[in-house]
Picture 1 (cartoon, rainbow over the protein chains, first blue to last red):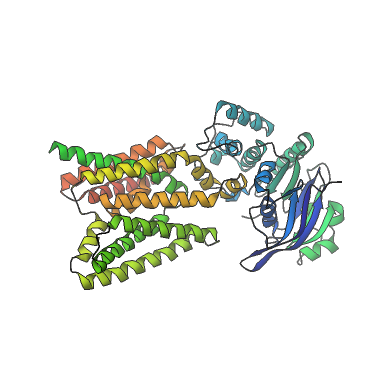
Picture 2: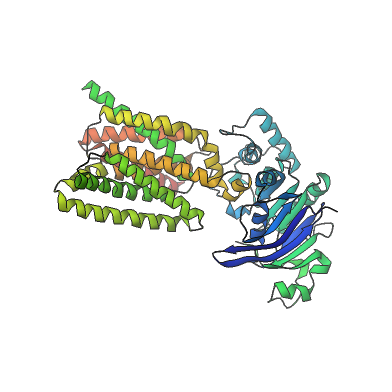
Length: 255
Length: 268
């Protein structure tokens, strides 16, 4: 079997402090994997390093056989990244069409004008995330769930093989979390997109049991949620945990 | 008289276009405080230029020295941000370097020549009320360089300001765009400084961008240019009415525009 995502002995340092230490795991496609861990565990750093946005001190990452650091352009075409919504500057007036168009235009050259064909592609992708007739709306006027869908659409328009999502359920109501979770599962099943997401919880709405990577600078466990989210294992990554939280909701959203 | 009138308002219009081409991106990329670096770098650079001319008996163009200093310090800001320092901290660091240059070269120049500081001050405050054909030519050449580049890469600048991590993930080279923009802003600020003065440039650079973020839903480029050219023309007109240097008029109009936005913002 081919390891579609291979992370080997990865160590990342920030100003001499260890963000990730000797992290290793492999995921075989198709995968829907949740990276869980406390705040400061290095979850976002892991996603960014997989994309080649952060240079590690040591280690090796291969995505679909490609070396992340030597073939970074190809990786960026294969992977769609959805950052945390709180990192987006809402003061910039951007329409939904422009945001989704960002994804398509990354393959073109300046001045990257949205042509008719791209606009049609934007509309098609917005339908995929159930946001028909949203293209002219201002991004900042949308609800949290709608913004998340727009960012997913921006990643999807590139037709990626892999989606990397940084806390997609952050600061959303329970129902909206379910909607986003179900959308991701639909994309995973219907479009054969591999999903690696960072979260503080495994949505109880997901109709199947995803794979979990338990991370706190080191990898403490990789496997089925039921096998990993056990108190004896959780205590290693979350030293303060004394009982198994209900619904696997652990830690807090970044605010 | 008609020739003077045409020349003055042509300089005002071209200055407005130059301001508009930079202001939009300066505001959207949350780099208003970056203007501080340019202001102080141009101050420090102009005093360095005055000092070098005095000590070595040269005739170096002061705007060139101040532009080079502004570009170097702007790139230093970009590099520090790239190394993980916050933008505010990086700006504070470069401003401290530029301020030290201003104090040291200001003091040294004043020890050699009694008119050195006055020469530097005229550059800083833009006290010259007379627009020259050279000013017009300098502005036209700068516009010819700055305007196409800012428009060609406008979407990139906007995307980066909107979502830096997402832009990186899409393959945009943030460092290149940051340096490009900082350099364009430094060149524009330096040229504007030699027509309306450093202080007025600092004020006016951020105003059209500020207005557009408050009033325009779509970051309309036309709105930016309209507001920046209007501010400059009204500023020159006010200056001629009040018999003050153009920098004074432009500064006053900018302040009124910002106050208007603040009052409007409180009422609505």
